[in-house]
Image (tube, rainbow, N blue to C red; front, side, top):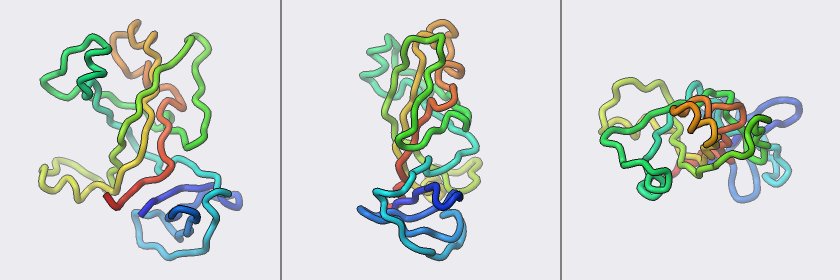
Length: 170
C-alpha cells in the first residue's frame, strides 16, 4: 500500500496510491478509516507523505561516502536530527540560504515509525514500522566544516525532501 498526502479542495487529505489513481481515505492512515473517492494521481498536488514529530538520522553509514568525506567508519552509529521544518514534499523547492554557494544532497531510505516507540526489542522493532519512503539529506558542507557538527548544516527549512509516498508493503 502506498500512503500519500495531497492538497485537495482547500484541505489536506490522506490517500492510497496505485499506478494511476489515489483513493482518498477518511482519516489518517494510522487510524481506522473508510474510502471516500478517487483522484487521478497525475492531477494530485502531492505533499510530504507524513509530518514527523522528529527526524532521527544516522551519519557515516555508507563505507564509500565515509571514505569520500575522509572519515573512518565509526564503532557506534553517528546520530543527528533534523527539525520537522526541514520536511519538504515532492516537487518542492529546496531553499539554499543566501550566505552559502551550494548544498550537497544524499539519497536516503527513510523508515516511517507508525506508533509511539520506546525501548523496543530488536525482535519487536519491525512491528512499529509503518513503512518506508525516499528522503534527501540536504547539507551545507561549507557550514558543516565551519561548525564541526551537523545540526545547523543539515537542519535548514526544506533540507529534508521526502516522498512521494510511504510504501507499507515491503
